[in-house]
Amino acid sequence: MNKLYCIFCIATSLLFCIKGSGQEPSVELDLFAQLDQAVGNIAYTHDGTLVLSHHPFFKPDVRVATYDAMAKTVIPFPNEEWNTPRDENDWYLDDVLGLRNDSKGVVWMLDMGTRNNVTPKLVAWDTNENKLHRIVYVPPPASLDISQLNDFVIDEQRNLIVIADEGIARGGDGSRAALVVVDLTTGIVQRVLQDHPSTTADRNMPTMIDGDPLSVRVHDKTTPIFVGADGITLDANNEWLYFCPLNGGKIYRLPIEALADHEMTDEQLGEKVETYSDKVNNGGLSIDHEGNLYFTNVGSHSIGFVSARDRTYSEIASDVRMQWPDGISYNRDGYMYVSAAQVHLGSAFNDGKDKTSKPFYIFRFRPLSDGIFGR
Image (cartoon, rainbow, N blue to C red; front, top):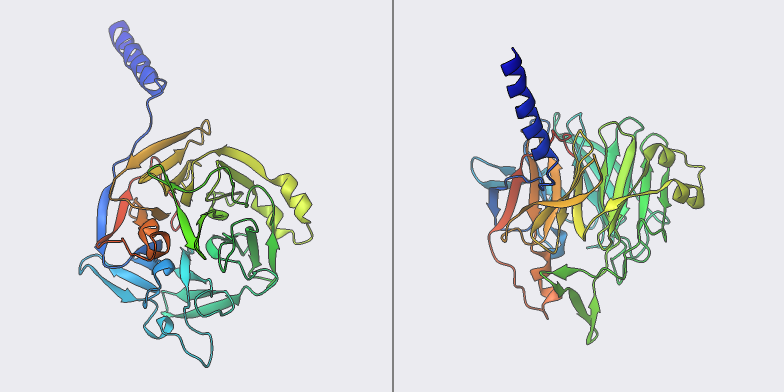
């Protein structure tokens, strides 16, 4: 018994040394899909089928589609009619990037409205009944001319949706980014935390791709790109909302319950915002059941990670083919799916020359702890 006890002690000590050795965590990336068009964000139907937005930066004809992994084809979602603009009304998908699914099989699509200048809206499609569930508009003053409503979370406990507005449409420079709170019970839509450091692009952290600055030429002048509030996610207990600007070195959080109190002023909300951890310039943001954060590092072909244990940042996966990793979300099959959109290779950033190349990829990996379906 003493010998067995000693063996146990040695094994335990070795395990402790390995865990405490400072070795960086890592995950293995799988190449899941190769597509003809760039993918923005990914959500799921009730049975786990991938629903993807074709990145609106490239003005796709099919805004949203499902991906058939067996046939390796995409099918317009929810149908072709909803992907076809019309003059008589705005019951179509105009410009979609953000997608989320709830636990009831409803896929929510965030129509930014920037392509044909229609009012931004959330379109909710019931994938169990294959029918429209709801449309919720996001009119002024909750949305502005410079609004680019990018990504969002669904708090089913409080019946809230919180949207990250990057603030970069129609000449916006990320300085007036904000969060937009949609109360699905009362219909109240509010713009909050505009001009707060947690939503505003950091001018000291320009977008860099492999060390080179990303800029766009406007009227013969080269202008660097700064993007405000972008990544956003909600923890498993529907308690903490995590969010951050794309251009910025910090992740922030605040109790989502505070956003349900529509009487709170921006100043009061700002006092509840906490600086959570360091990061690099990132796109999408996700979280697992342990509270670990995962995000796409747009400038370095990689996935970033912030440990819930000590709030330290590390890189956990990379692939040179993962050009501008964007959306990231967890499916019931145990994988987080990541799109690679090649945004920086588009014509707007390359003197009118489209430098993107087919195929466009979707990667996946198993997170270090079980994720949350649709987040």
